[in-house]
Image (cartoon, rainbow over all chains, first blue to last red; front, side, top):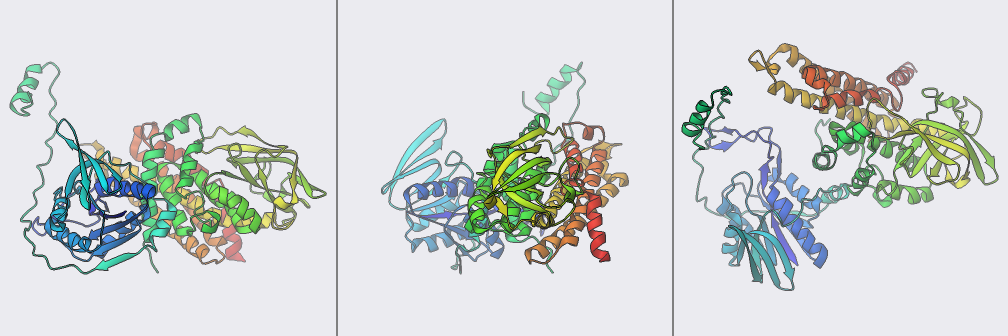
Length: 246
Length: 379
């Protein structure tokens, strides 16, 4: 089984978000970057579980500059076999998906896995675009994935329940909670990651279809209002007219 | 000269943080309160490769150098000093002694188990009446054919009860003669080898400290590390490396206390503003941060020399001395910044404060470090 796991570099969840260049660019100064948790915890770990049981290889793919090598090494430390970085630099989903699809088309992967979304731009677009560009089926938001011979079965979370989906042949799946348990890489994995292959591939020409005009932060939280315990009427009034929760 | 962490260190730091958040932080106050030594945590640390950080891969270890080792200890100690201490003692002392001075057979037999935490290691030098003056130890090994018969007791031994194997330095020659002592590997279960009283301590309470007792304990000569008479000299070399780990332990405690204090000072409001706005607090934090960075540089200097195989007795002692004192000063100031809350067990600085004091005492007091430094600079 040949699995391609797509990973994205995202700011650590505790990052204080700010912008530069007239609020058109995320301020990366002093930001700690991590592997997108959906890609790491669910897609990669489930891929490992499958290959550990059934044999196979896992390749990590990322589209981005050389700074991204650190998160690729982390994915290799967790257990992937080798990695590819497409040396392009864009956060646009179509650009990223096009680069991955172009590479994946020629490599004969059985499964292409992504997280359900990235925790920075939350687009949830790349997986579907890759599938379309490769001309293969796409299953989104899967919370389980089992492979038996050439047939894969996935459970999808839908409103109020689940649906079970079956796919044969190559497919793309986006993974979410339930798929696997996060793994902490061990020292041996960290040591081995240094010598596992990381191939740099030049990007193909893809037109940038969208551009970000401006980022706007939500308004700062207002100060807490304290209402005296004997003024219940005022509390109810504020909950009704200001907070609009009752 | 490079002053940045390497890629491995960054990954190890992240790995330890993830592990500590999941496995240590939620239970550490419980262990502290009841003085429980959490053996399962060390088994898990073994799975991660943290119980044999410096052990070559052919013996089941992780095969890293001192930079990565320092990072691992610092990151654990930033969360819990007790777990950091036990990790340091296991890696540097018992495991380190066998790694540096064991023969091939001993390394194959013991390092493979120690590096994976199948065995937890103890190391015995100190006795009730001989701490800093360890060369006058009273525990004696008398030769009897192919065996040695050991009698006596060792004191303040980390993992003295839960340890599966101990390296013990005992007298085989004249008292006070640095060539009159030898080191033995003794497994738990060897007749005549038991553990005694478990100490009830101020801090580092989840790290087990007990007596080791030897009553006509017969140990085969094949369990001796190196040659007869080399034990004390070996021990001093083991402590050279051990000082880096205790320095790292102190640094981790200082960083943990400092980070908690920075966070609190921004959140705590008095007189209508965060207390970090007041110079009384920001000057304290500035002092703490400066001392932490100075300690870190001393530690990495010693670690770099150790990695290159250079003699680093003075540099190791300086790192250990300075970093330990910084741990105490920084955690004391952290409690002060927290004020009344810092004195309670609801906030982490109370524990850092208690745990820090061990660093100026264990594996050579600050005074002994100054003695070592003095001897070196005046030689």
